[in-house]
Amino acid sequence: MVKHVILWNLKDEYSEEEKGEIKAGIKEGLEGLKRKIPGLLDIRVNIHPLASSNCDLMLDSSFEDEESLKGYAVHPAHVAVADGKVRPFTKSRVCMDYVEE
Image (cartoon, rainbow, N blue to C red):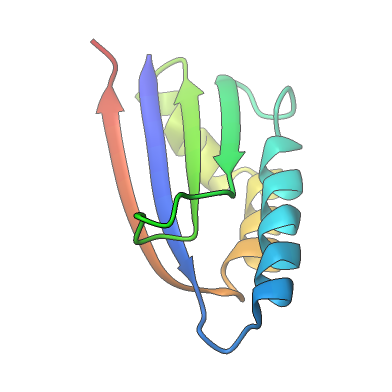
């Protein structure tokens, strides 16, 4: 199994209320991809970080294998969510992909 974890920070220009709405939209969009993309086993978005965190939200997803992750990256449903709900609102992204041992 391959894990795909992303941490994002939202752009500073948004109010806390706007950030809450944006995070909810990202969560809905990404979690809505479950059962739509071949090889995607699980996908969860955490939008409630503790105050000690230095990011705004996290994607935690699991794939059958590395090929499934590559397919997810270019799948039209994922690209639509990334382009419509994630990329316009985020200022930074950190990603780690790894094989679950």
